[in-house]
Length: 209
Image (cartoon, rainbow, N blue to C red; front, side, top):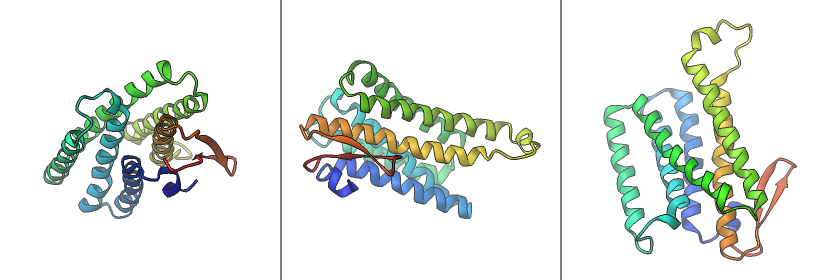
């Protein structure tokens, strides 16, 4: 299933996957140039993607979801963040703020895993791998960041920062994929997961989501 065929007219999911792709492009630009503007192209899309993901995860639990209230608030927040982050160039504050949004996503996913997805084992497996890859990535990143001097003294540098990018990249695909599967199930589209090349899980439906 290609993105267009699988996500169809669900603009929220299309936007989520588009912003995740934008994070990848911004990250490559930042690490290739180390310029301020490219750093913003990396970190601001991260906030846009995680806020969109959290909104979609919690949407069923929020009041006043029939109108434009929540999308308006989220995008107002994102624009304000982009302006302030450009002005103040947060480092630790950015990491903490992104971590807070990530915890909000994790709390909802954990609740879904325990109480809402008993009849969807394939989604539960996606969520398991989401948590594993995410936590592994964060762990190696923190070791690489805080113990850099010791890591550099090893005979072979394990390249923890690279593992962070790869692991979180996988998690950033698996988490939204699980959400897209649930959305397709809600719409009665009889979705299934097929592994392309034996590794890449994709959703297949008879109709557009």
